[in-house]
Amino acid sequence: MKKHLLISFLTACLLMNCTKKKDDNKDSVTLLALLALSSSSCTTSFGAGVPDWIKNSFTCVTVSVSGSNYVFKTTSVPTYKSVYWGSTSSLYESSLYTNSSGKNSANPNLIKSQNITLTVPMNNTSTSAPASSFGAIGVSTNGIVIYNDQAAPGDSLSTEYYTFDTSQGHPTNTGAYHYHVEPPKLTNNDSNLVGIALDGYLIFGKKHDDTANGTSGFSLGGANSTTQCNLSGKTTSVPTSWTQAANYNSTKTSSTAYHYHVNNGSEVNGIILSGKYIGTAGTSQ
Ligand SMILES: [Zn+2]
Ligand SMILES: [Zn+2]
Image 1: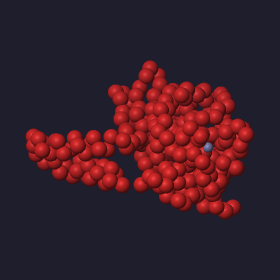
Image 2: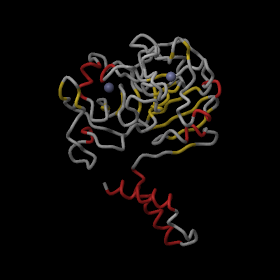
Image 3: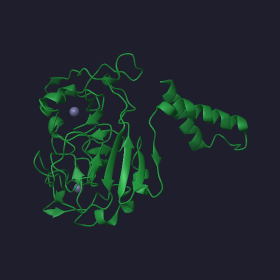
Image 4: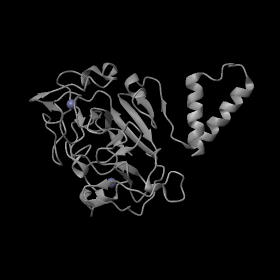
């Protein structure tokens, strides 16, 4: 896609500092023109006081600090190919996720830019395990919102599952693109940071770290429990394999800190967030 090529070129320019003469008006004009052309692609911006671990982990979100909350705003529009762009889009691909039971078939919806705001508590230490609701209950590191393991009323996730695109996402009837299960664009049976839940606790891939422990020692919940990490009966801090762990809130990195993992199941059972949060959630609108 033209825009993407331009964005890549612009990024390469910035990295290589190819605008050597900073006082050269011509270069500035060219850069401005490129920026204008890329304005419809995803936006990443961080306000005053947003910590490094967020800046270094998230893209396609606008994050600010409001009191004791982080405010994540996202359009939840993927930057990759999907059947849900529609056949006239340059980002269209006809294939869907190929699951073990057979082939998926697309739902009738198309991706539409959303205006989603998640207000997430910074220093939550609550472990009251309230039920999560339908809709956005977290945001991924690529700006795509996360839904729980429930499908829209009248349907079940085990049915909806067969409509996932190659990246395990799909849009609602209002075009809101989202994930329910392990998103291969971000994690594949590893300890990558996947996103942040509405209660402010972080979500990692299926593994706590890269050791042989794998996921076997985890106490991972299904639809009716939290997905707290528990290695050998001991609650553990966020994975130190996460390069931003040192920059994370110290209340969340102690040995008794809670965090989530993608559930240790495949396909429809590899849910990201279950029917309950760890602690009191912020708001989503
Ligand atoms: Zn869904
Ligand atoms: Zn863990």
